[in-house]
Length: 224
Image 1 (cartoon, rainbow, N blue to C red):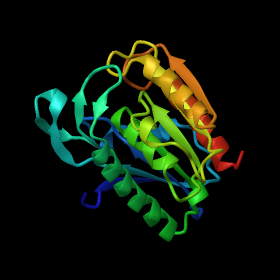
Image 2: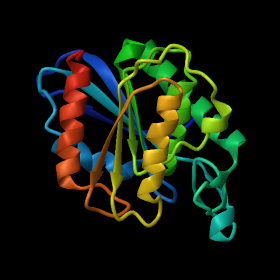
Image 3: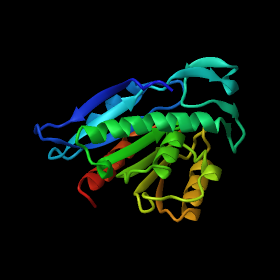
Image 4: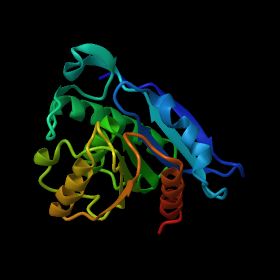
């Protein structure tokens, strides 16, 4: 996979050194622009310099959408509850995100200060990226998503105690809420701990959720 294009947004009202990064992956058919408007709504601590990276997925045919070419992190082959997906493409997307992680480290952000976030398809890649990573990372934010590669991961090395926040909509008809519950259970079988929060919403994000995400990020930025 070619190097990903991305949007950069910095939260740094006090012109401090950038010490933390959040790499946030969008969902199927969307773009890195999707979550840019969320940043000012998070209520982030002004005393922390944070760089947000919003990558754009490459365009590819998506089987469940009739082979239509659209931005996607991987092909979805079957829309069963279990989801039949192209695991090799998830790995390729994860490799591309690892390049962005390495880029942030090269720019002076410690790996343990880098948080990986993902919505829907982007969340599946976020799971795989964090749980197979060679670097100690700062957190995993899984939004309205599922753990697509649980069968391919039989152990977690350096991120065994990473903070994981799972959010899901009670009325999600695209990625049913049970998949968020199952992801939590699969993580626990790997020895990880995850916090699962549900909201009265569909396949989306809502303002109260964004505020709680901001509070969670502030905790991570403070080292708690």
